[in-house]
Image (cartoon, rainbow, N blue to C red; front, top):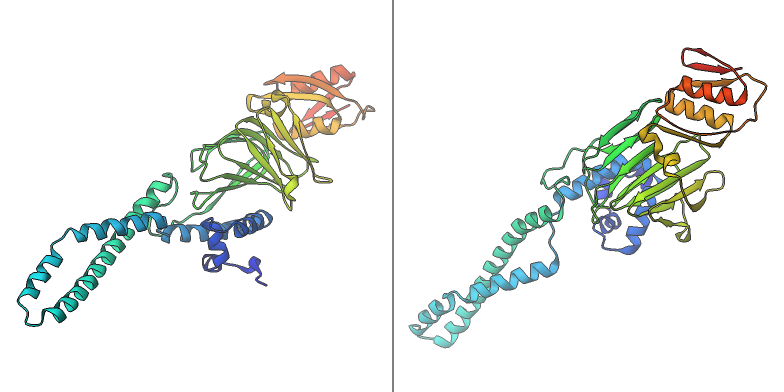
Length: 361
């Protein structure tokens, strides 16, 4: 049995099963490789490079189009006066019977050669045009392999940053988040990896699905906007859909464990048991961070401290006697000092500040 983990670029581009997957020619191969790539994101760089080579050197047109062009060229050749010239030569020949057969054979042979040559010429030129028409302008149409590198963008705690992807899709990264994506999308899909939290506004392209891989989840979209939170230290991974539709697949998932979200629905993956469920969500609570909105709903100290860490890059320490309190509130563009003051007033506590550390007493 082949060990695909040992595969390099040349192994993928010469593997018949992988080529059938790439050109979507066999359902079994498509399912196998789609799942294998989800399970082995560490091979994504090699997969992308292999796709670049396949994409660059594949000039293909549908068989039906090729047959039509052959017929068209053959019909055009039949309109030529080739046979008439040959027949006039036969009239002056002393053995017309033999000559007619010989010249008819020569004519057919010549016609086949011309038809084949013209068809191959059309195939070479037309298929390049076909590839160019089939691909959006952010996909490679060059006959030379496109150099694609993986870009890793990390946004520190307390910051946010907007990124425009090669296909025109927009991503807004929250603090302490990392996005990995190729410098150019090639092949049959758009592949990314996320750790942390981001809001996506995906450019629609039904022929090139948009796949985001996290530690435990794969999100598939065509054109939509949604928020994805998948911090590694959290007990939950969440996908909150604003527009469009997305499909959620657990890593190592079974077919019946895939769910599809509609607008205003949220998919929640519980990391401890990998259970996946669908629910409604509060847009300010899940996506308000983009406008500087902070929402607490029955939040304990650990959750409050985690929010201070992600939003403000401030460490919150509780040295008070109250360790099990809960807090509720919604705030817009509030400073960390103002927020901790409100929390302490509501719980009859005090605080001190030392650099990026706030201590509650």
